[in-house]
Amino acid sequence: AAALQDRYTVLRYDHRGHGKSPAPPGPFDMQAMADDAAALIAQQGGGPVHFVGLSLGGMTAQALAVRHPALVSSLVIANSAGRYDDDARAMWQSRVDTVLAQGMAAIADGAVQRWFTPEFRADQQGGARVAALRAGLVATNPAAYAASCEAVSRIDFLDSNPKIVCPVLVISG
View 1: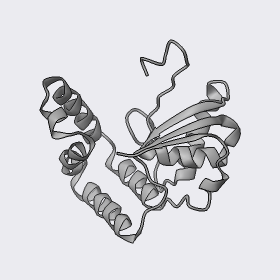
View 2 (view 1 turned 90 degrees about the horizontal axis):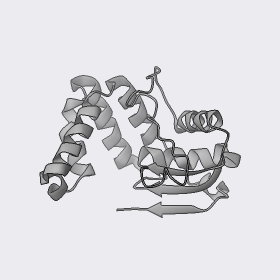
View 3 (view 1 turned 120 degrees about the vertical axis):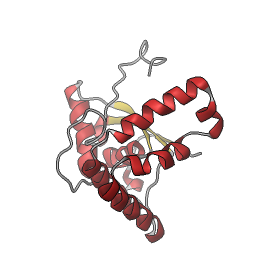
View 4 (view 1 turned 135 degrees about the vertical axis):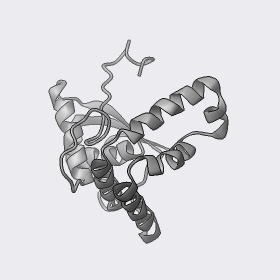
């Protein structure tokens, strides 16, 4: 964001129930999250925008481009998915059950292990960033996080993605 801000207006936001965004009662779905992004874009002048989404943000991007195509000039979808099979849905349900029963701390260490390499976590500067992100995750409202996980588990963009008309860059790693 810092590298782009001299050339572009850069908007970053927390999804509902994450960070400092409100945590409305669930259930959530990806269409509502896309509508949240559309409302933010409209508040800032109405786009069209280059929308970059990582993980949940990439899922939001897929829904946004179909629901609000006039607001999007291009997409970058990074480390995201378009659909989950039954095994993956069961994994998401397990995460929901864990968070609701034990709180966010119960999944925090596993999350940072998925998000960051061992080398980055061991590095002094990287370790400080990891600790800050872990603290933010632990501070997330468990019910809102669970509702987001449930929304993620239900995605299926296989029929709608062919309707995306803007350029799309998909990154996986």
